[in-house]
Image 1 (cartoon, rainbow, N blue to C red):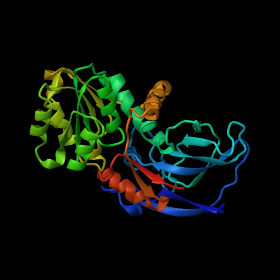
Image 2: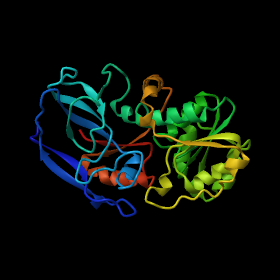
Image 3: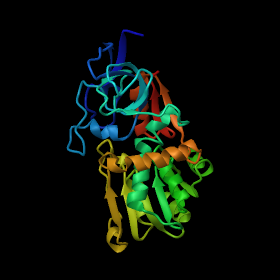
Length: 333
């Protein structure tokens, strides 16, 4: 075993677009563990849009990412040393250990994974992890679609949107995705089973969405905001429901206007923003359902994997620009 490991810290707060020099790669001596602690070698790191908000020193649902400390992030890895009776060397664990190859934990926030499960380790950061639970919660608890209704999902090829659409199809809905580029739209329809997908980059968003939703829209899972969200609002049916998950179009501080706000009144709409970590009581149910679907091949997912911790900053910048295809991960070992 090497006597050192590498991590990435937040070196400065972005001014507009995130840049590689907002991060710093550090090499540190391997830490020693104390009583009740474990040492984890991380195998995969999850990169997610919420991290962009944490990089700002502004009021939000969570504290800002501190400067000069390991960047926040979900991980899956393996226990390589243990002084904690609840964990043994070789156990696979899920945690929030951050952008680091190694980490010490007291085990309080680690979840031991079932070694006998057919679910790939990386999927616990995607379809059977926080992104999947985000999709499941927004759909089942907020949108609550009925069979035959039309559901629209923005960022449909991403880690969250792809799960929303597949679950909605299994509930008997007509599902229309919005994604960037013909390749992503083809994947959404041909591989994931959406009924249609609108390419917002094609330059005909409103007309294409109208053609794909001839009976209007009953429920929206919104990840993008801006023009994409406005296009969906214009097609909403009375008493439509909107799960507001993300507004990636404004993550760099751009203003996000809602031009079609009047439809909230005329169509009597309901919109609710949510943070899935605030609903831990429902995680066991959601994880069980998602895990069963992935294990039986009824829920598909795709991953973009960057190799090595040094590639994490560029992979994250690409994620914010929509360059990833499916769940963005970094393979650490």
